[in-house]
Amino acid sequence: MKNEIRIDNIKFWVDQNIIYCKFYNDFDKNYFHDGFEDIFYEAISILSNGTYLPMIFDLTEVKSLVLVKLFKLLSCSSKLESVVLSKVFLVENQKQKIILSFYVMFSDANVPNLIFMESDLAIEYSSNNYALFNSVSYDS
Image 1: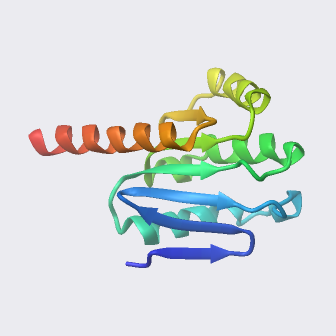
Image 2: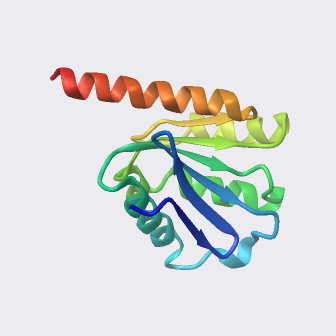
């Protein structure tokens, strides 16, 4: 199993049963194209090795103009929902958190989407979610 995948200005890796995705500050709207979702699906599939893992998307370096479009694409993707346990989005400030929370309230996602400003809380939530999922799965 690969530990890290880098595609242009996006880095994917796994650490302690959590898949991380970091967007770097030069990521912009020019990256959106027809196969954009497939990049995430493939990277997640490789890193998860067939296991449902929580996902943390670090959007702290993404420009505000691209942030909402990127969030809407990733949070509502049925393709991504089929390979992850939950999706957490890290943002830089309260304004971004409020804007994205508005979209979460009105979304119809099957996989939980949460927004955090603190990475330690995002990691704690993801770890607890993974532990709960596996305790229920193995108890059945």
